[in-house]
Image (cartoon, rainbow, N blue to C red):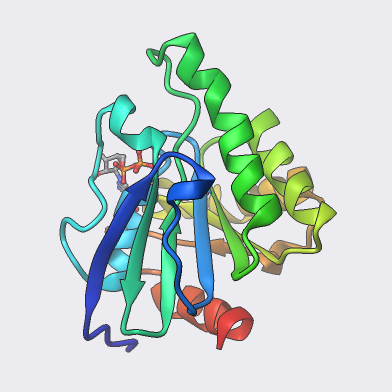
Length: 194
Ligand code: GDP
């Protein structure tokens, strides 16, 4: 099992000038609000409440940096798709995330989360497009797979893969509840930053 010794919250930043300066590779996590991003980050670093689960919309409109074992920086990107977020905040998401993905030199990969019961939509496809433009690796994760009926699971994973135009093995099933996928996600992450 991947053991995490030290995790530190470094800072929340609302613009490029405020991002921390450091020498570590970064791994960014993006997903629709409520897709399970905070729970996944907490599971990956084995902490209960590092990233806030079910946080209020306003707070999440910042980029949060967490340093793990002096080896890598996990970057929690703002969620999107909140029904109740004011239009101005909604409009700010695109430029902020696009700017980060395009310009952050030490960024090693984007982890793109999609709730396994939902289809990828416009924002997920935009995120992928921004990564493609700079040839940044994307790691696709289908979250909350414990909620899928066993009989439906293979089909759902195939559908998500098809929507992203990737082979089905590229879509990693993950459950923060059971821990399924945690080791495999660390393995895939280490391939890109290790
Ligand atoms: P975020 O908004 O993307 O950060 O999502 P959260 O991590 O706050 O999770 C949203 C809701 O889904 C919470 O009620 C979580 O308890 C629940 N949740 C997150 N991950 C899982 C999972 O793997 N399995 C199940 N059953 N529920 C989950």
